[in-house]
Image (cartoon, rainbow, N blue to C red):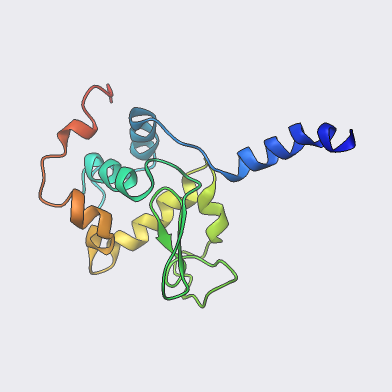
Length: 147
């Protein structure tokens, strides 16, 4: 009987651990407010395309890589170079904990991707962007969002 009483608590805890899945236009507004539209020459549609193909707009996405590092959050920021996950060696260039990239608060994510995109590869640092977004008409990503 006690175990049944704990089920709602466990459900709430696991729901919080999954992150938030944003709608396309909701995410567009948040990224625009965060200053990503036009940052380093990349329009908002590039950021939306990246976030979709990297995480399907899910802040709770974590992918483990063969080198022992992991990619975190809506933009899949790598722990080897950009954030600290206490599991893999890191440069921690964003000076942030990887787990902070898994929440609905995108301030850490936005600050970090600004640093990533200022690196020599630009948005080319992300394979999903290279494979699905680079050189394509991306205007449909912001269409009908009333920005």
